[in-house]
Image (cartoon, rainbow, N blue to C red; front, side, top):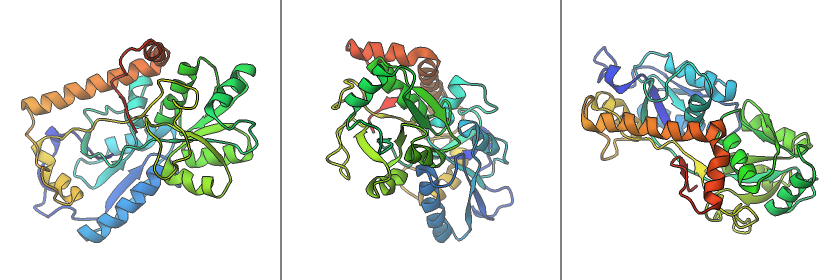
Length: 320
């Protein structure tokens, strides 16, 4: 997703000097290390906007604390649209399950959701498994000895892996990194056994034979990897989807910047602050964050039990 700093209620409808947006270079903060899927996507977008809008969009990687450092950087920036955040839904999961110095509802103005994708379960090539069923069996035979990497505690990859463990009824050890690009070398070398990888960054490693892909996290197989089964198909019934933040249109006050970043797409204008639409956006955001909070603070296992018993899905889980 792309977010701009500041709440919609606090933002002026222009840069403040009457100049068209953007009036100077735009800082694009990525709260993870270079080389991961979010970073690759941010650089594609920055290059496009630089050409289309006539100002430089400069990617600034600010990793650490599961992405919270970069997110906090944007939260503290001037709310004029010249500092934007490109992030996964980890910005919300982090705020829901641990102490951070930002509010994902109050401190940001959502611009647009960029993508929603499933992940690839990648293992080190020497790990003696070729399916999720075999990975679960290995974890069950070696309690606490199978490890998985993530892009940081409380992030999407962490919770996605914990959901797998919860549904399968096994324990695996979490090894967090500052970004998935830092986690890949650990999996390649065998320091860590597996990781959920973003297709943008994982496919080159998979095709080069540096890691082994055994499943995908979505409800359906990926078109680019039709031979890889879903996690649900390969031994963990009920597992599907990836965590996403349900971005909703913000108030009218920042519509000029949103429209510029969206390329003037129809429907860019949104209702003003104080309307029922704005109140609903805040309410829905808090409900989603509360759902993630339940998942992060032990509710993952309760949710897994409900799924096994045929209950409803957690409200923050969406098919990838």
